[in-house]
Length: 155
Image (tube, rainbow, N blue to C red; front, side, top):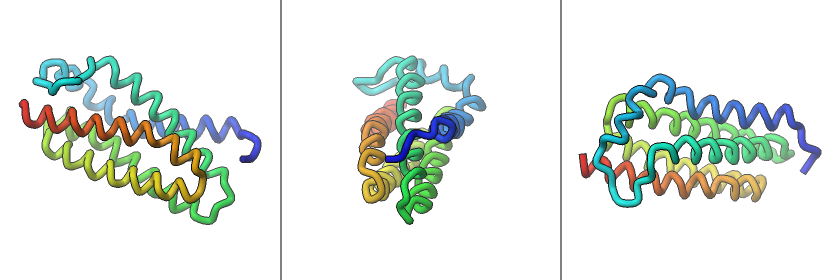
């Protein structure tokens, strides 16, 4: 790995957090309704979500930075799938909180999980550490899909 370019690293972390959180701004008022929903067992308090997502977005930003700093010819393919899954991720928030479409949100998160698995596999071929940095993200999405489905069933 080359010397760290902190400007580029910060850029990739910042853009990941920005894209990931912009939809939350538009549905922020509806996000408090989460506390009123019937939730499945193991549901964490609402405060856990912004903390977890901030950590995950930082790890994701580091992973795409590492991909973009590589000399691999497939890095633009990796960047494309990265930003597609990031936008799909961001759009889940208005589907779930803005429109209260819990089943559609569940289907959406399944699509996101498949995209993230694909992204991890592509990243693995370019930079193994970048792929490993996205394992917590995948695990969180699997947990979130459990919560999403549980909320759909219970509400």
